[in-house]
Image 1 (tube, one colour):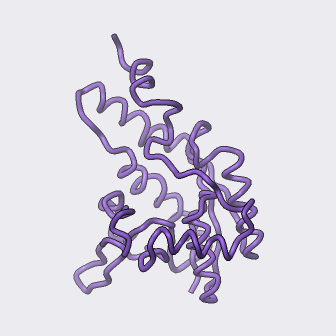
Image 2 (tube, rainbow, N blue to C red; image 1 turned 60 degrees about the vertical axis):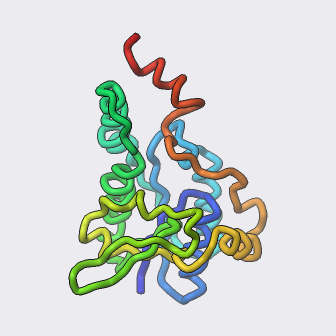
Length: 206
């Protein structure tokens, strides 16, 4: 089985890739570049993702999606805020940016599946594949993925589905050297530097 894995440089995606490698799958790491100020796209994160792939002995690709991210996530988010809405940009990012970017690489490489470090699961059914919660309810991320298309769900696999965050952290610390693991948690609004309220004051008219 060949799998494209979204690699952010964090513990979860590194563990997901390592678990697949340990299963003997043909794995390719892909880092998606969303925004110059995004915590998941800074120089340290990209460098670490590349190093993680080198450590695992798998190919690594970087894909620039900054313009797509701006048009499909950042601009619609601030437009919604101006209209008095409370949009969830991560939901649309996963559907229209992250998974489309990974799907594009998967098609180019003729890969069978796409994997991420999300704490979620997938239920296969003749009626269609459905996103479900993973084992760690405290870290559940399935709600971020509810808009995935039928093809995206069909290609999806979540190596961390049966593990808790603590189990993933322990596995990663045993599998990787400390300098290959990020110490900070990812944040929801990755395209905002500082507080959302401060950013809103700059983006919204007085």
